Amino acid sequence: MKLGNIKIFIFLFFITTFSASSIEEIETVPLINLEELSPTFEEDKDELEKTEEQNNNINNIENISDEKKSKKKEKIYINIKALDKITAKTSAMRLAIGEKKFFGPLEIKALKCQLSENNEAIDTVAYLQVKDLSSKDNNQVFLFNGWTFVSSPTLQSIDHPIYDLWITSCENI
Image (cartoon, rainbow, N blue to C red; front, side):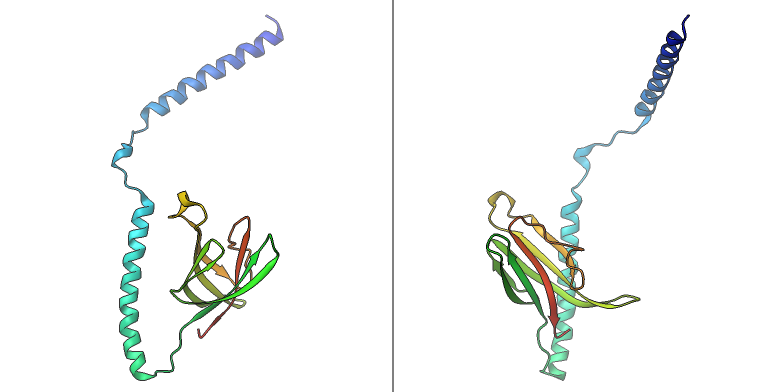
């Protein structure tokens, strides 16, 4: 037998050995009925709505007691810069917490703004939800849903081909 034939024989031996063992491993894996699984996104959404309602109830109770103590308490506002990449024009927006505003086809909702304390520095962070209403089939999906930072707006950026948003500051926090 030639040296080339021995290499081919050894190669074929390893292939048949490993393929047989991989088939045995696949057969021993338990099967999961996918119809019995519930979608995790809807569960997370329901849990977030429940906790948001609970937080709103707690905040309402706290707000009533705070209003009695002092009526100077003002709303928290988020200042946002918006860029239209086609016209290269920027716009400044001021959103109150819970308020929705529109920039082109984008629906922007500000949910929270607070100071984030790090070991090295203090940063302002805001929780935003942005929907693109221009595509009718994508109405229920957020273009952006998360925290964004004043010091580094590209860390959690809003990815849109035409528009760009970033927060500049928060007021009354």
